[in-house]
Image (cartoon, rainbow, N blue to C red; front, side, top):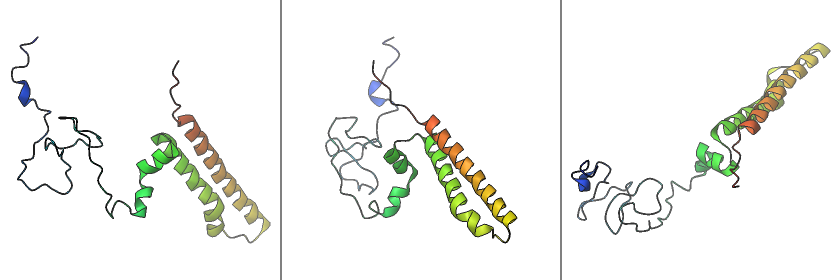
Length: 145
């Protein structure tokens, strides 16, 4: 089995090494110790083990639209992807029941009023179904025994 790897230092997974005198691209973060590229989301260099220095946030990262990104909402609410999608569908159903039905349909007679209320009930039932699906699809934390 030891004959399977002939030249271990040139394996395919080795990170690209940036020469010290080469200009570094602004989007690429490299280790100060060994000049190898950091892996995405890593806190330490996977080659030498040096700690990743904390970089100051730029103005583009502090923009308010950063909080509208799907993974930030998902992490803040602690929901799985399917559960968050069901939650968003439920919110759309609530908005449709509360606002959109009143804006789209006008009430002229008592029968129109009953029809509008039936439409609202249908949207509210859709919201209840979506919220129930979100609860059923939510990840439960693993309990250690």
